Length: 425
Ligand SMILES: Cc1ncc(COP(=O)(O)O)c(C=O)c1O
Image (tube, rainbow, N blue to C red; front, side):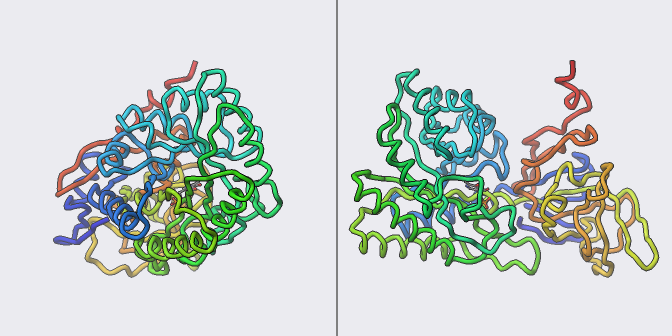
């Protein structure tokens, strides 16, 4: 988010956040279009310059709406979609189907059929039952599906337990070290309706080190060579997402280009050592494209000081629009948009509005003195906030506005009570 303070007010993407809150209401997700585009360009340029042939697939699970998919199409990105709903959103925004990769750990038959009918470029397969189902559905339709196998390289990155996905005890993918992955690959090679084109891994999220990516790449190349030795030729390699961003001063993000530089060097070294051609490379950044572009605005409704214990600042949103503190104790940086140049001289707990004690945006947060009517801005909320929103307590989902050059436009309308009850019978 390109943020600045002008006359005591917080500006995002050139727009006054206090005015945005007045115009659109709160809670409000604000996304800075230039920051999104800049991240895409950094990833794509580094892929082209450091590696060569490849595709940067934005993981739409981070933040998905039609406008985001249109921006991804314009930026020449691919899309890593995790469900029929994400594929539908991308296609209905005019996103080219062949640049979509469908990656999830338990696809429904109708989602597989939908992906095949619409010409989705690749399906990443997670388990053996899914493999048989993809083969059956492809055969019924007389189609051949390009399949990528999701593997567990057994690499642990230093990240929160719940978002660590590449180690062996994970619900995602086939383990390499147990022989499960090789067995699956040999099985696919025999199945009709499937073209095994690639292998995939994703080692975790919010990773601030390059070494785990290099290690994962090494393991994957060794596996590609082992496949080659069995007569199975692989042309694509996806190394997933997971690039860390700055939520608080404790986070020290690495420039995206540095990952690509080091991983590309490792790829070249592995290919030379193993006598492999350089595969078509895919990466799947989600958080790093969307999170830094977002800020969420709330209206402060209450202030409750419990002497000797803490001060709660109550806001009009919370776990319904941002469940990450409740889920993972994820930390954020916050400030008052209408008092942005005042000192942060209080330590507070920011409490959400739902009937749940754990509904907090954060604890021990430094903030300016907050009173009812102030506008609270929580930074770096562009990923895994709107996309993880819920209707708990029948709270309508917040609107999303995109800002660019000081102008704003609605990209997702605020829900109404009627929207919340739309499917009730
Ligand atoms: C398979 C896969 N690819 C990409 C991503 C995106 O990760 P991140 O948002 O950390 O870049 C995830 C996140 O869970 C994932 O599971």
